[in-house]
Image (cartoon, rainbow, N blue to C red):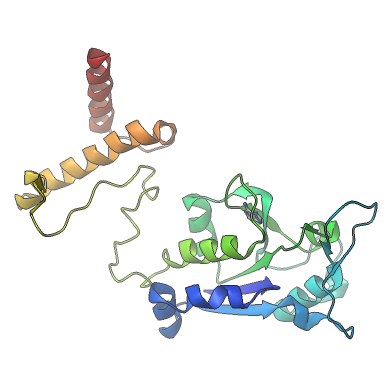
Length: 256
Ligand code: ADE
């Protein structure tokens, strides 16, 4: 999978993408992350990428020309094709607080593409024509405002990459994650079996895998019930799951 990232701050990316799992995934040719400096697509003496907003008001706005130029060159889109939206099979995603809110389902959806483009906004905003005539999708990472789209782009690259085959060391690594199965993940323990008087639950030391699976499922259900009950409405639940949740609710009522 190939990520084409368009940014005014290329240096913001390297410390993260050149470490750990993303580094290894790139070395093994499983992902490619190309960082493009939008400033390289300006043709004036001072390489200007922003300007004051029409109509007045504070702040600066990202100019359309360098962003269009960069994306069209890299994705090999013919500018003459552009009327409304570009004729591109590659999603051209703008990171913006106005986008659809990123989640595991969107990460999965994006992981199916061989190539995606990510445009990182900066300054106070971007010229609206970028949004209207270049971008095919808008993604937000949550209801708060950052100084730019670089962190959101990194976050998206990370969440998508770890879903790709062989990126994680453990081939089932992404399957049990919180959110992957619509529930929060069960708790994990490693050695020692007792730490400062706190013991690892006996069932995990029992070697009985059916029991361990049942315990993990119930822990995931209970955690989700207590911390993120909204997620239970969309989760796929078996009859046993529903019975377990009913019991939890009953126990809760008795305590009240
Ligand atoms: N740029 C600034 N804030 C953002 C957010 N919350 N999500 C995506 N891009 C952004």
